[in-house]
Length: 428
Figure 1: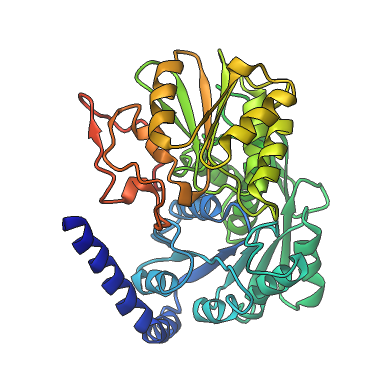
Figure 2: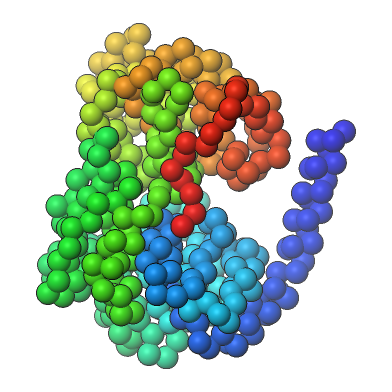
């Protein structure tokens, strides 16, 4: 009964919020125009928006009070609610914008009316909402139409689709990426566990090495984007680099967590797209650890069916992975394909449900191991992690929530002994 009441409350709150969307946007539009002393930075892209937002907030907070999007509330009614949270004493406001269909960008972008617009990349995500990457690119580019007079467009020069937006606009342009031709560029990126990502950053004639707390070379893009924005806003490169070194990985985005037995699980269970999977598998392949394990539920935005995704996964990990654990529908097919690709049968395990997989993982992990936990948000694979610290009440196989289990009232987590959150994924 209690569960039903919670569900009904969630439905009612959702309906109320949806009915208030026009009013909330109108209030946010007006409030933004009154905040004329606050510099608004809007961040969009297919991948890396939340981490870029945190990097920007970490740097800009050294210069003045800075607001940034709560969690990853980047769409729907939650985006304008974040604008309403900005106060006149905030010198900067960093707002994350996400889209999942044609026509979704212009209204939020006009509401934010950013002084600085950051476009990170255009990748194969939201494939069910857009016909092709050209349509997706055109929608992302609408953020530049909303720039305030004299605004700055900060664009990824490494992405041809994003770089191409520069020629169609009359705003100030700043390019970032990995080429010396850009205004801000980075090189010599290295992230080999147990070491974190380090790189060399360049802005104009200045260069500075950065030792971050992030995992994976794919974060070089967000870092160069954050440096491009902040150096243009007057922050010294060395000062910005020092601020970046204090920024922690965000929850469930390449977020390392040490287990009581000495093993480490790297959470990457928020975004399960092919692009993020390729980046995290590259990281896993290069780690220095006793054993390399991959725990995976599914991959999203591939444009193929689950069997095709499992075949791709089997090919991607063959020849170097020590243990593959596949959870969910068609796991038996995935196990068979991994063995056909050359993996030993005792190095591949499949489970229909998360609870059984959690018990197996608990018996397998030992000191020195590093496991990558990969999945879609809707798979709620985080329960596999929580089960290593205690008991979990909810093992529902079909959950309609799109939130992380960390924030769910139905998780029912009971720690075994004194539980100390070891995740490095905290807000800036």
